[in-house]
Length: 409
Length: 113
Image (tube, rainbow over all chains, first blue to last red; front, side):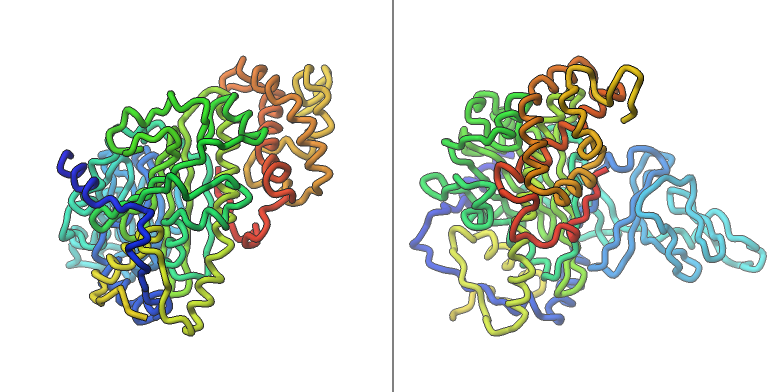
């Protein structure tokens, strides 16, 4: 843990660094169908992918389905009678029909609607109707096809390779130990939103890994945001990275927000209440121990963003469908409460968060469409303000096997 | 949200808010957001002003109960309070029912249970 902390200090990027000059990131990987196929086979099939949280399937028999189009697979995660979580390809071993049709639910067993082949929640094939006509078949060899599954802080990850190159813990390094102490189990789902956008997945998630856009995109919802003197801080963390976001100390809440502060809390900064900042207890969040800290956003490579704030967390999943389309799920969680007043305060944050995300959606499809035209071969980025975009595209390129990411104009 | 012999759908001390119950006491985020976008700024403003006067008293009243054991009238009042939080940005931030310059609201599916 100390070693991880040290490496964080060493790699911290000063976000105001004009001497770095711009970075030129090629557009081709965002619009090329060939590059997308390489991302599929050389990246997504070789990494751990976050698909949900353990609270979604608390009891034996519970399941949910993830349509992982980027893997070309439908997958379901289920809790066995032994309490263990398992992930399986959502197909019957007979002729490959889709086994589980509902997005989520609970089942004692899984029966295929085609010929009635039935599997238990540990994935074993238990029934073949008219089994005598399959004499010689060993049911033990026809169980559901598993994926690797592991859990970190309640987040469920799957890997296409049943014996992955790296354990989940190793894959997540150095982020794995950084979130110790965050009260994940106290978090309750507050808002869940989804969209399919006509955008490459990298362009889509780029919009959320820099704070530079806040000045323009969020000029209505966050009119007092300033990039000077205290700027958000960005850190590459192995293949992952982190963005830390601060708020204007002179923020004046509107009436509804002031009410939220009074009744309970807000996701955003309560200037009058900074002494209460719980993150002072957690070693790695709010690393700089600033009073105007709002959140740390961890980008878990390749496509999972985890925002952690004081009493809340926000999870973004960006699922590539084609080079030009991405399915996106956002889940907002807040601290479980039995107090109606706190719950009313939390509704303020939920709506404000969702509306701010709507603001973010205003640029993404236009950006992708313009890049699609091919007339602009590269993006000109700030190496400081937009360092994490450069970083993310670089890690993708490492997997796909193309270099360099930086090109000269 | 039923009307009892004792009067309206809300606890007695919030009679002033009865006219808003039919439109704004909605149980899900999807419904509340839908009503925000379907309403005029005038309708939203009327609701906002009336609720702002009562929000502190509403919270105090509801805090006499546990969140998961609210009687019907209190549940109705809580949904009104949620609607207040849903429409507040329309009045305070965007000056229009919906977020301007965003993609069409229908494209963001609200899956909140």
